[in-house]
Amino acid sequence: MKDLITIRIYFEYGQKINNQSFWKKIYASDFSTELMKRAKSSNLEQVLHLNVIKGYLDHQKINWGTNEIRHYKHPHLIEITDSEANINQFLEKEKELLEETKVLMVKNEVLIFH
Image (tube, helix red, strand yellow):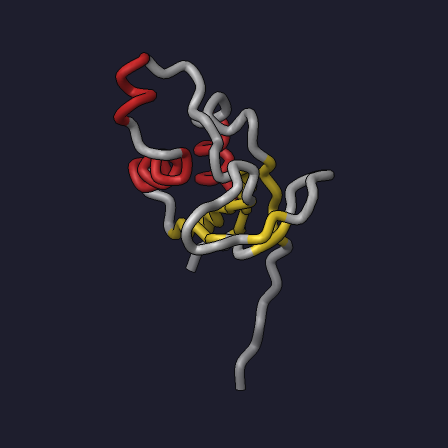
């Protein structure tokens, strides 16, 4: 079994994808879908889009989630698990896409079950 690490990519609900043509802006996927598609095409082991119910990013006010309408600054996150080399390669490849996000490595701990 290979050594795995986990990173989390935090972004706002209305996160934009930079440098797209007019038509791509109209018909393209949202940020989380685009990021997940790119991660899948990079053959990363596991990618999860976690929908945050309430929270805040940086120094924002707390954003309370509702099922119908989300505030454009509502926090979301993508969690990626794979080898450190694969994740670093992905981050370097997608540097431009990720420039307005916050990427954090989650401390990995081994849990022993009896």
